[in-house]
Image (cartoon, rainbow, N blue to C red):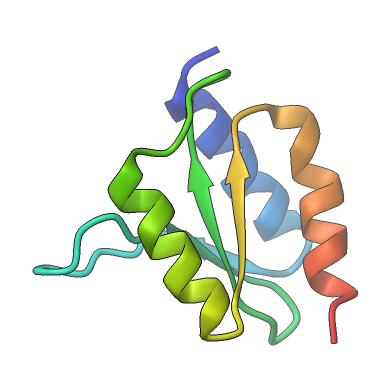
Length: 92
């Protein structure tokens, strides 16, 4: 399965959950993951092809975002989508 396919399924699942999954771009600050906004909660989601891992710069951005208090996920399998959305929706 390609990354694009997982990303499409992810966006559809977020929309069905009442959220908004938008592509987050930040010129001059590479490596920032996509973001997810269900039920007034915000988390960052890095979508990868199955078995692919984030690049070192992406991992550095993930650490920074976590340090700032955000949840950050790496999504590389469509089976992770439902649990991820539930965890975000149920977070404090």
